Amino acid sequence: MTLEEAFKGLPTFATDRLRVRPLRESDAEAIFAIKGNPLATEPYGAEPHGSLHETERWVKDRLTDYQIRDSMLWVLSPKEKDEAIGSCCYWHFDVESKSAEVGYELHPEYWHQGLMLEALAPVLAFGFGGIGLHRIEACPLAENKSSNNLLHKLGFEFEGTLRQRVLFRGRFIDLHYYSLLLGELRPNSTA
Image 1 (spheres, rainbow, N blue to C red):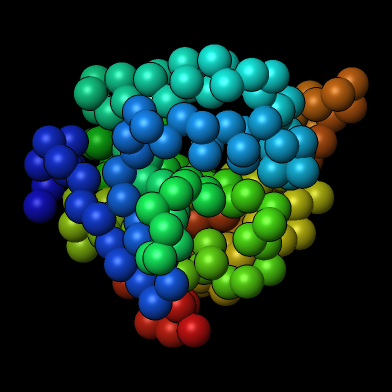
Image 2: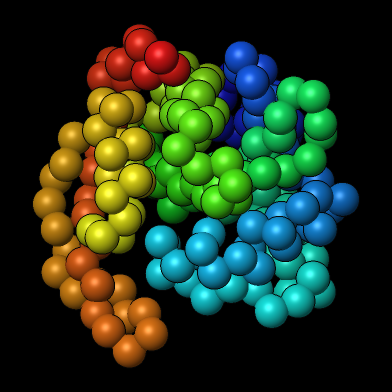
């Protein structure tokens, strides 16, 4: 599958505990439980959504982004219940350099269970083997220790700090910059 083919239909991945599948309009209410929760949005420097309507608009925008080949987004759902508990995406594609940025979020109820590690492993493998990326980037806030730790476990290399890069709630916050190159994804990253 090429990048162009991926924009014609994203695959679904199954892990031990999760189904990682493409976003649907019907996911809006479950996504609002994440996007409307300040515990979930503050770690990446965003204000929570104030209404279900705002999240419905966000979901439609992400589906449009996919149609115009700007991003691809999957939701994470437990195998036993098809309800979104998180998401992960590729965006900021640089087709010429074969790179993209990965992003992710998870409802706080599911934190510290290794679920994002489990979900990202096949998504990252797909980025390299499925759509031919050479480099995957990630840019968490420096103070988001959980996200920084996750990236280390997946084999991402810390490249540096973008000092005071994000203005959030009246203060400037450092951003960390990570990359993972083709061949660097750890084979035991789901362990």
